[in-house]
Length: 546
Image (tube, rainbow, N blue to C red; front, side, top):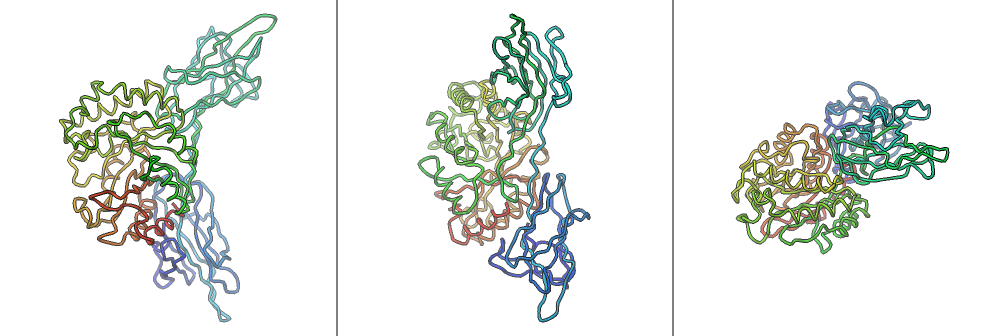
């Protein structure tokens, strides 16, 4: 959030230009006063104020307050931009942020002032979801709770014969299931197997002392039955093999993110699905990539590109595949890829081959099937190719369920509409439901004078606000990202638009990530960040606090 957007009495300071500031400008506070703004955030664990001071008989002080409560005061002794970090815990929602300068001084030929660049928010790590094992369902003849002061709640669950303990856990997508267990060894260790919704995900030997065993793959999101089985009961030779459980936890995975706590991703062109291009672009921006998206059309019949998935993961990012059921050479009239054909099983062999390969891959993977379905330019859109909204939902669920049946619980499902302006099908008619959507990814562009069908040059708010409101009503607790965006260079100032986009999304929306469409599209526009040095520099600056 740029400090120059804060409210400050005109008599107490002003906006000033500074090429070293994140938006090319900052806020100068020259008398004892408070600059304030209201911002909507997710859960926050730290607030960073980027500031510098004009020194005069000592450093200016900076006091941060949130919702009227003082968080802390620091002396800003640096004369170049420096991050001042305040830690705490703030709930999701709207907050009043106030930055005060309490010790103005002028004398001896100098003038003490406080200068502010921006305020950024660090997203709080999500809380783990846990259940004590002694609360699980287990046949009475097979075991029961037992006291143990070393267990997490002072008790555990003892399983003394081959049997299964079960429970239901509900947690957001993306974490990992962790089982804390130990075994009574007898002619070998006790073994446990863990099943999710009836499918065994892994088997492991239990250690003699409490230890964590982590299931492979990502938690799929939502409520799921978890079953822990003792598979090799044995008694003989004066000993008795048993399995003991302490607790089950869905431990969230917090993605690497900069000070602002948001994700950043790219879709790029190149021979290796654009991965190398994206990584090179990110290096030039000085920003780690959290997500790399690439595209796969069904007509090519290619297998799941596991080598590319591993290359993305090796670079510290999560791969996302935009999976397109069509032949891109044939337009929208493609009966072989109709929604009805997909639901009827015409492509089940191909879908299942991907699903099994995804399960075998086992690492987090975002899958964006049938994106921009509310438009008219793809054959899976209900407005063309004989489709209907109900048929789209049925086809989406059919593909999703084949992956679930194959055990691909590591896949996060991205439902990705185009921005709603002028599109024929309301989003409420196309939403597959909370059990089928882990992330909502919105596509929206500023076409400028290059793409008149996009409405001319539009501000970021004009592009995204209506769609964000619509998806907020459909799925208020589902994470939202901008999955594709870009801007033309023609019709306005692209560098300024990029800065405005990041600021708008960070300060006025619940969006948790932005993935730039870094392509030059024939017949449309050159959407790439590097269309001009100014545009690239604006992106690099904005990403410092994103």
